[in-house]
Image 1: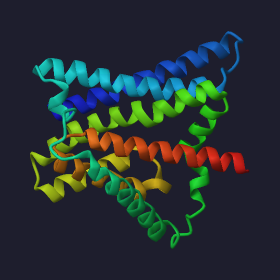
Image 2: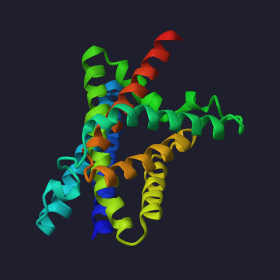
Image 3: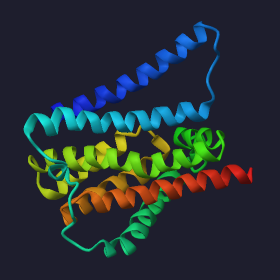
Length: 230
């Protein structure tokens, strides 16, 4: 059932992307030209995140009579104060993993070609209003959608088949691989595994959403700062 729901999640996200691409092609055929990149980037990010949550609601929760709490959106069993050390520890470990893997391979400069960074630049180019909406989408909506899918659906499905370490590791690998960002793969792998371990430890995906959101917000801020320094 989890794989079935995951397939619907991917299908809904793909439909949003196809619809947006189709609208662009129609607009170009009618001579309207290409719309500004900022609202387009916001539509893709926000549209796919919302589509993912709708897919989960329709094809998993409603069909099985479940609640959002059943996919981890519930009160954590442990204090959120642990995030004070967990957030810097996870992000620091991800940065160290990236240095150990990418620099020896001569890929230290690949981050400048990161498509995610280009999306953030597109959002910022639309002015302060779209920039704020974009940051809110990246730091709030996207983490909620991703945690529901990867820690609320994929992780429990793998944990039902494998032992804790194996299930957590595989779920982290799936999370990193789905992002399709090779330069960021070591960081995403550490982040994905840590978020899975946190979901198990807290018995909730809420702390993971907070960490995920802080991570995305700081990455977004770093991209904006770097862009302004060029």
